[in-house]
Length: 352
Image (cartoon, rainbow, N blue to C red; front, side):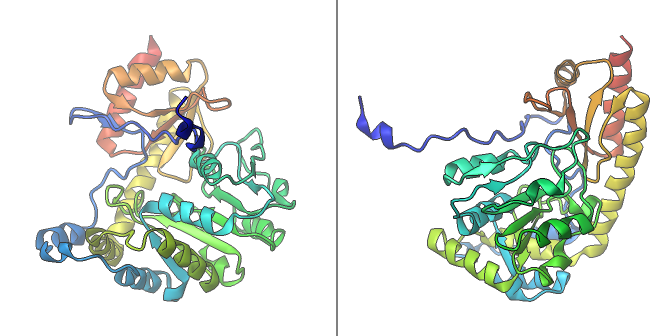
């Protein structure tokens, strides 16, 4: 027996969505934005000087922090940035979830939460979503070491109204509440305004979905200066240089072009609403998504069978072989042409 093996930390890792190779496919499985980043990002790439790459990047990410603080009209001391929202949330887990009480998050939610809790040895409980997949806020009115949930939720796509979120926060003033708003730009109102009222609220967003920069890895959090200061202290104790120089430069350019940003959002939302009509006609049922995906189940055909048939025809959607989710497909909203290809295949497949 090699005794060092006894001391290896054992966790069940997060399983990311498949990244299929090749060009001749329709990729609707990882909620990426189907449209390119802002034109300013492309221009910045063309003009980028590679000589500064020999130096360490700015550990404070000051240019990006400044751009975000101006965009959201908050203080620079209210902004934290990291390598995608996963990095930001992981840093928040390390920083704030250190109580002996369990943290709370929904049983159907972003599956990385359980992974971080296990990795950092944080006790947790998962209140069960209601039959319609909505969060029952009263389930979170009890002693806890912290609360986190996505809004809109993933993979269901459902949005919790801001007044309900405020009630939940008001009932939990002794722990940090994290609202994971990866999909907020596609529908609903951000809880960011509540960070001015509640010192224990942290709102996390990302450039991966609405800003078309999943490959660059930029996430950020907005919250009270005390929360941000604590997170930076943990970050500088772990890895001072988390944000690479190209990401910092390109992230600033993405924030600058608000017109292009909102035009892309409008296109995706329009396509999503059209997709809801098409899916309904094909016999699918689904929660009313406020994201860039639809979480759909067919009335007669098994989700796994549909998933496999789509995959064989180079159309990729996400299938979760998990309790309560194993008869649903998560379908990312693609371009109008990609959605036409999806529906053309489904029409033939479901008629047989």
